[in-house]
Image 1 (cartoon, one colour):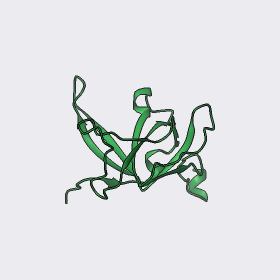
Image 2 (cartoon, one colour):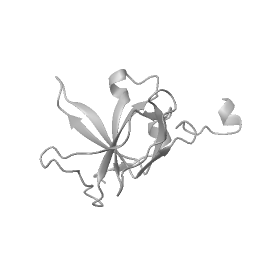
Image 3 (spheres, helix red, strand yellow):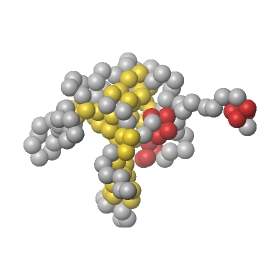
Length: 136
């Protein structure tokens, strides 16, 4: 069975250390038409949120990520908490892998989409198992 299109993923599995939005959500503009993009699956306007992955193991270049959010109105992000940074989470997160051929060698890259963006409930950290397994 082939997987086609967007792959649903849990926020905490992709971003176990959370993410920080670095500015407000903005319309995603189609460069050819100069109009706001619409989602091909549901026809809603697409907004983009620039975030920074808080994973200390991620390289600086890999930490800057754009997440596209399909919503009728522009998502409102929480007020900044740390300088310009706003801890957020994404609901209905999906990932689409693709081959990026802009450098010397092709590489696998990922496109992220979500149904919603909201204030982080626990810093975005993945939940840890409880009981004896947590102590191991």
